[in-house]
Picture (spheres, one colour):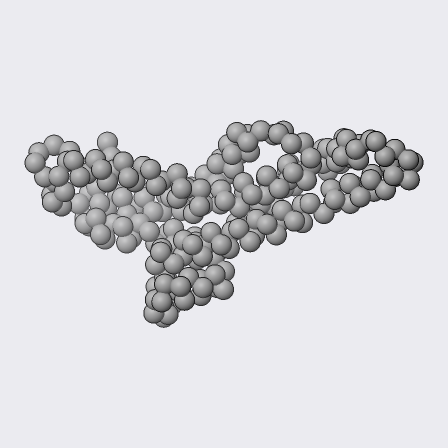
Length: 221
């Protein structure tokens, strides 16, 4: 099913069945980390968690809901990239037109192009400096070993920037409510209890989920 022959003494590339199983299990272990780090999931999940903290709803929506929404939105964005990688790498490999090294090279190009679009030049330069690699002649010459961490750093910065912007209107509401409660002498009443309904009401009135999700998706276009 996965295109890895496990029958016979050795496969055509010289890997025995036991070694193939080990490599397959290793790949399955690393795959979740790759999906979380090298897809829009990283930025989207950060923004949604910042939004929940800004609303002050604690556990609503739950982590499962936020992660599920992040996964579906990430899949929506990555579908063209995955489809192109499949057509350029996996299909020719199954048809015997190219070997595994050529399939990896061809299939990784769409992913490299996606990472290159959103990785900042400053972060790429930092990774090149850390690895002491030769400066590439063109951006397309960069390897995944450099693009992957540079993309993660860039997405972390983008996620925190957008999260900070989302915080501002709700922070204003908190400050206003705290000032009003203190001026009325209601010291024993936590301002958060009063401001939470107003923040949720404001978010619902402006159709916040549509605005936030729409802005996030457009940022990847």
